[in-house]
Length: 101
Image (spheres, rainbow, N blue to C red):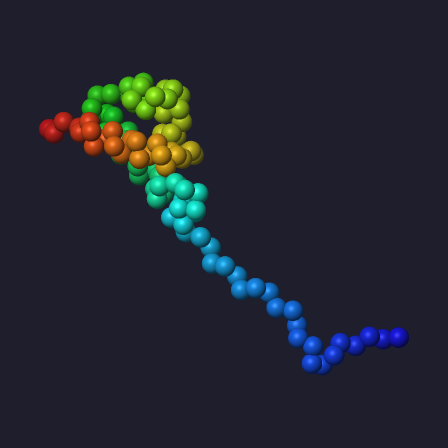
């Protein structure tokens, strides 16, 4: 016995595809601040700020209450700085302004 589909049968439809989330939406969904995930510009800014202050990663680690290794890891190009720590670094950079030349 051969089964043939009805001519009036509806084809199953898939739900509409959801658009991809932006970085901002992902961070908001995760409850984080809206800082970019890839933050190379920010890392350069932090490194230049430390250099202008004549400070090193040990000093920054003490300010952030983390290990020196953690700060060094943040500044590596293949890692990211957590949003909460970026906010803390941003506040430190405002608090300790680099001397003007």
